[in-house]
Length: 560
Image (cartoon, rainbow, N blue to C red; front, side, top):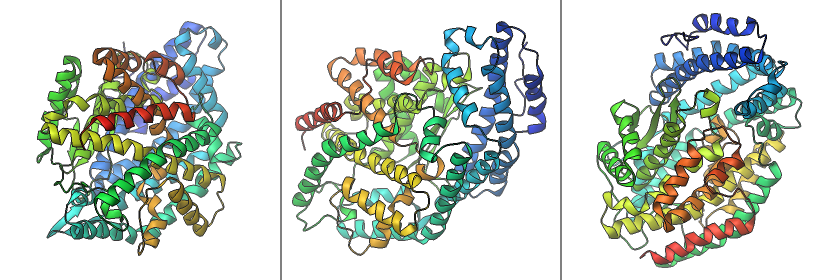
């Protein structure tokens, strides 16, 4: 008989509490009892995790619905604090049990993570974490309400993206300016939110005995395979390898467009004057096209993707009152992935759909694993699943385009990877500085952002928009909702590029390697997961250079 009924309300503390008390008070007299305890806790966690996921999904899909927002905040304020309290108690029941050293190897990663969680847990941090979540929710509400009047109607920022590809420079300038100025209207409150988040997060770190939030988050995120110093080396490698190529591309763009200087609204337009790529007009066209691509790659991937549409696990259109961005959220009890995004008919939307589908494939591949922690792979490898899929689908983008258009999309995507890496370094370096200097002023923050923009940014003239440039960091939601979650994209991009190298030589071999790593979930450490797919985990300039060099080679093979 299952420890918890399938219909248990995982969003209600009165419903959850008896099962938590059972786990808290249960007699654990042997190693077998401990394994049953872990299994029962996992079953309860699945239901609670899915309840939270559904509340979060509703909250991001309907930021302007008071009832939905209230339900989310009720969970944040009344359930999550209790879960934090019990989590520490139950963690200790496992780690401090006499038989923990006799557990089978499958529990090694779990015990290592729980040991770290115990070391950093402080009861006084629970209300601070609740307050931080409330501030992040307010940030999402602000962003969800941001729209502009353009072309005769109200448009979301996602819908405005297509205008930045318009061949009419005046239209692009008007579109970019309207979005930038609308975002800037909220900059004061967003800065206030960030000020408060920095204060709260530094307090959480010092409460837990850390020098600062950097050290706290490396422990909290279970970054066992690399260090703060490795991240700094990675920044330097990106600067040395990617920036020269990025600046070369910028100069080619400036010359081809016959401009004295590139302006921010010149970065998305096709330099040869071709109209914006339009892979689809209706969201369902994008879904159907991606389904065909995945079926062409393998029946397994195609069938996995089709389950999302069949089970109402997609919310893809851009609309008022919807939070920005995109994500995949795994429903742990149902064993189904949910994908959220803001589609508006662009090539970037197709890439996002494929990216999030890669996360979904990871969830499907690891869904056979029994325990919830075994299915929760480290982010650095989870992003390999998604970023690899973007590259592995390259040969099939003719599903949306002619060959000429598909070549254009492939070239843009590879060039975007070269540009993405410095942006990743910018955001990660910014966070490291922010939390290493928690008493900084807003003026110092702006100065650091400008310094990093000069070090890692494009060669763009922002004259007349200096105030907007100083708060350019505000558009990166990760800084607010998931602090220090960004360097993972860079680490994963290196893994994805290695997977792409395999795919360029042998497509079936690459898909086999892809599956081999993903189906392990989190039953191996990060380095071992990379190795399971034949990938190396390195931050060196030579490693980064070899992978970015292959992009440069591939670009030379694609017609401009």
